[in-house]
Image (cartoon, rainbow, N blue to C red; front, side, top):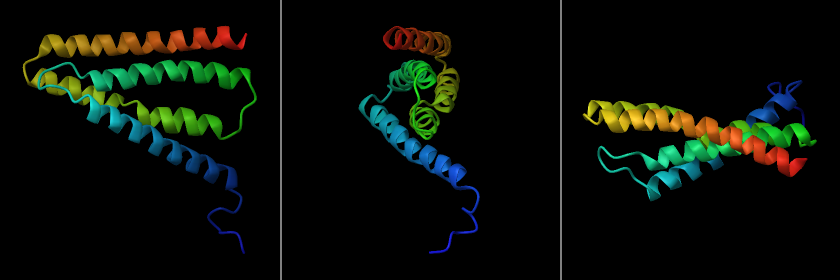
Length: 137
């Protein structure tokens, strides 16, 4: 079967895009499941979005260390990092949630959510990398 002109010479790039897309499906469906399980109360703290962003950041910290320390399949990082974790985390929903809280007159909750998410996500990424370094050492 002849090779498609679209793929000719671009096989690795096409494979990486496919890996990102497949991972994005997995991560997005997981996030959707969490959002269904933990819907926010009107004006309440958006725990589902907070949780997926913090957990995703922790896992990204682990992935960065593990991928750097070990030889992995060339598509592992695009699939897991960009695809799964990129689809799982949702900083766009984080921004929308904060805007809705502010617009609804819940300024204190919005500020706690904004600050808490940033601090917890950065802390989780750092913790993930520290734990991964200890395990891979």
